Image (cartoon, rainbow, N blue to C red; front, side):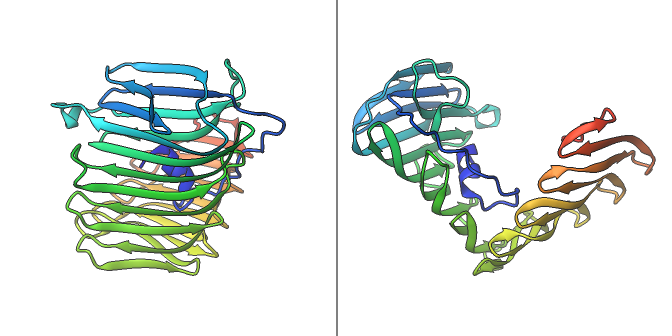
Length: 318
């Protein structure tokens, strides 16, 4: 799943995040493009005209006058796998596209419109963007990923209606498939909360669902055992999320409240030994975090306040 899709979906078990503050009294006469066409040919068209084409496996960064016009605009970004590339050695191609108020924008000034990454065969992102006085309005995005460059085997599809200036998502739908064509899940989001979802087991049967914001999100290993399960209430993660090894042993237990990390955290190795213990408060690390070796002996300890480490050397990043 692309970073853009992940950040926009708001349907994973990650804590809810507030959108960026509105950028007032700015217009955006420039378009900023950053890309690495390592494994794909990348084509960007705006209102039917080619804006950029990257065919060589190198990085590209540019800020140019924006061809976006007042009213409706159609932006299409397409990744197509390079002929003969070895998928097992793919490093992944990336592209970031945004609008800027300056030819040399300061950090944080660029409003993102598209952020794509892929190691698969093909990607296409179509954005229908309204502009008024050089300020982006509503954007309707359809992003599709395929396993193959011929675009016969789809891996993901994402649809959303959102506001680039505030980051607010009105509604979105995310669908994902396995390489054999089995649907893995469909998640529907309204006002940045899960309204409904269905999650399917490796044999294709319905394994979990969320109705009217309440229920379970689940994923499975290929062997049919649960990989991860998260309870939802009022459209947000609420309670203890559990991750499991393929053997069925517990790998981690993490607590959420109203979509944010809040409460105890435990992580285990595949033998069942506790390896990390800590806690979150309002989405940030809080209090003592302790690491243990394979025999259960304490080997590191750090203390956190509002996500900042105040004592100890271990950042407990993983």
